[in-house]
Every structure is written in C-alpha cells, then in structure tokens.
Image (cartoon, rainbow over all chains, first blue to last red; front, side):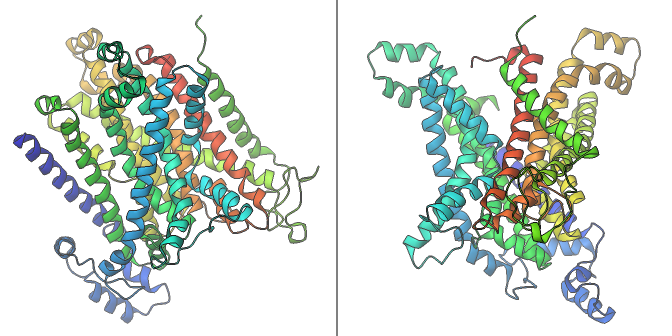
Length: 314
Length: 272
C-alpha cells in the first residue's frame, strides 16, 4: 500500500511539473511578443522596452520559468494587466462560482446517471430501457451550450420562471440559487448521458453473476439487490468514467459560465483573452489543467478503496 | 450474410445527409450565404428563403449549408493531423518498446491533461483567436488518443507468427511496421477516427460559439448560435436550426463509429 501510494504520488507530481512546462512553453516560447500583444501595434519602442523589462522578458527562459513556479507555489501568480490587481485575488473572488457549479453539476450528474443507469439495467429490454438508451445517445450529441440556449428559451424567455443569465451575488441566496439552476442542469444533463450508458452496461454485467442470483434467491428485495449488491460491484468502470468526465466537466464550466454570463473562472479566462492579459490566462490554464490532473490522481487512489485487489496487481 | 447493426445503418444515413449537404454547398447554395439584405431581415420561411433570414437578412439555409462544409473541413483536417501523428507515435512506441514506449505513453498521458478548449485558449491568448488555432487545438488532443489505440493494437500484431517470419527474414522494424503492422491496425484506427470526427465537430462548434474558432464572415454552426443567443427574444427560431445540424452530424458520426466497431470487432458485440 505504501509503495503504491508513493509511486502514484510521484507520478502525479511529475505530471503536474510536465503540465507546467507545457503551459509555460506554449505561452512564452512560441513566436510572439507579449509586450507587443499587450500594448498593441501602435506602441512606441520605448514603451515596449520598458514593459519587457517590467515583465522580466529579458531574463533567460529558465529563470523566468522557475520564478513563475516558485512564486505560484507561494500563491503569487503575478499581476493582472487589465484589472491591475494580483491574479490570485481575481481567482479568489471567482473561485466560489466555478466550484459551486462544478460540484452541483457533478452531484446532479451522479444522481441522474446512477438512477437512470441502474433503472434501465433492472428493466433490461423494456420500453423504459430503450428510452434511456435513446435519450443518452442524444445527450452525447447535444452541445452543452445549445442545450443551455434551449433551456433559456423555454424557462426564461417563454415561461419566465428563471433568469436567462447573470448573477447578482451571494448576498441573496435565493436569487443566487435561481441563477444557478439552469447552468447546473445544462452542465449535468450532457455529462450524465455518457455516465448513464456506462452505469447501465456495467450493472448488466454484474447482474448476470452468480452472487446476484444467490442474493435474489435468498429472498432479498429487487431494490435491495440492485443498490446493495449490484451497484457497489459495478463501481470500478463508473469511477473511471467519472474521473475522465471531470476534465469535460471543468471544460464545461468554462463554456457554461460564458453562456450564462456567470462571474467564475471560465468567464475570467475569456475576459483575459480579449484584454490580452497573458499572466492571468497562463495562471488560469495552469489551474484548470492542475484540477484535471488532480481529479485523475484521486480516481487512481479511489480504485484501491473500491477494489482492494488492485493494490496487489499494480 | 449477417444483418448490419441498426446504429451502423442509421449513422451512415445521417452522415450521408450531412456530408452530402456539405459537398453540395461547394457547388450550390440557394443564396450567397454571406449576402446581406437589411431590409429583408428576420424574414419568415418562404419559397425563396426556406428557413427565413437572420438579423442581417442572410439566408439561413445557405448559411447552414456553408457551415456544414466548414465543420466537415475542420473535423477532417484536425482528425487527419492528430490521427497521423498519433498513429506514427503509437507504431514507433510498439516497434521499439522499452524506454521509447514508456516515454511516448507518458507523453500521451500528459496530453489528456489538456482538454481542447484549454489548448485553444492558450493559442488564442498568444496568437489571437482563429479557425486555424482551433484546428490545431483539436488536432493536438487527438494525438494521444490515436497513439494509445495504435500502440495497443500494434502490440497484439507484433506477437503474430507472420511478423516473426518477417523478422526472421531480416526485415527492419520500420519496414515491418509499415508493411505488416499498419495495414492490420487500420480497422480500430478507422473506428476511432469516426468517433473522433464526431468529437471534433462538437469541439469546433463550441470553440466557434465562444469566439475561438471560425471568424466572421465564415459560416459556422457554433457562431450562428452565439449570434442567435443575443436575439432570443426577437427570433428564437434562429437558435434552433444550427443546434439541430450539430446534433445530426455528431449523432451520425457517433452511431457510425459504434456500428463500425461492432462489425469489425466481434469480441465487443455486447448484449444490448
């Protein structure tokens, strides 16, 4: 167990390091002058030279990379050019929105996918099973941003039940919750399509096994067999997909925040691109990639909790 | 002759519809998709404008057709670039093995840390948003996927007797990879390419919707949707058609890919 944990942790840290190299390389090594990008084509040579000096662009690349990493590890991501405040402050302000969206999206995804997936497997080859499969196939093909637009058309434009977008702050919790309903649903429905299929096929496989027949023969209720015996054993492939889906979910929050004009990190990234605010973009891309890598690391650790046999095999 | 799976047939029909429309748009569209006519804006569907016109009086059907062509072109180029680099890396890893194989696979793992959107965001921040950056980003995320598929399939072929025979006859690993391994891993690679084609269409639409892909005046389903979103109270119908096109295309290639896999890999035929 100790060795397994050690190997996984080292691998995780090395991946993070490699990710930081890629982010830094794309943002700094590719041809292009950040000073020119920030100031625009009309900038004077003096102004460009001064900004290059201020940004540390005259230092050797390696020096710049290590000072970026060193400062980032201490919570200093540089200063945003457009907002003129530390990037860390910007991130701190917008993180709650993105985290609430990601967590509520994941929770709703799990509820929908596990219920529909197990339900469809329990009624294998029935009309309901067929309907779930059809809907999930459709869900995979629907872009989250289009589903968002359709939801807004129905619930905001036509029925006027919920706001079409925007966010008035956390001080009014009811209004805040109302603003997050449509984004969460849009995020979760598309995500749960894939997970529903995996849950269903994984559950079907388990249901064919002898111990399930034994459980049923010993008089346990259908429901109890499904949730206590089938689901826990079907979890390994489900957790794998959840881990992989986390990348999609993170990307999803970026898109959804822009569809609904929500003040989270995804919206910040787009504001920073149009403001040519490179330090902010660099910090945010690194943060999002780090979240994806961390999620995969946690999934790796979860495997061992779910299926202790894996400890030995690896 | 065995019966073809339903998903294969349905997928093929949808793909034929979308690809046919895209091909037709090369030679004919009902109107010029970029031609504006402000006085004829928001026109209702009619014999002249089958689905009406948009906020600038442009014909919606013509725009959807031109967008189909752009979407197919982006997906094709991105999957071809990502696929050929990925397959080459996978073949290389499988042929040489050892630390090269480990290195290539660790690099592939690294690629999974960057969703296409993140990569496109980085490129847009450095070079400004453009369709070619979107293509690059989509191609990039395809590399690790194809590298894995190619390596896994190639490793199986390397254990076969005819490969041992070729080695005994003195063929180089490179020549074996080219003449014996590649032709034998084409089936899983093509299946993967079909599925990734669907993913690429979805990615292009999302990037263009966010302003990181097709730039005006180029037609794109994603960009049409972002324009329609600002007009939802005025012309909600404009937010419907492009989405339906995306779903048709993605569903078509997705079903076709699943169907092809069922046909080419009998071990995977599951109870449905």
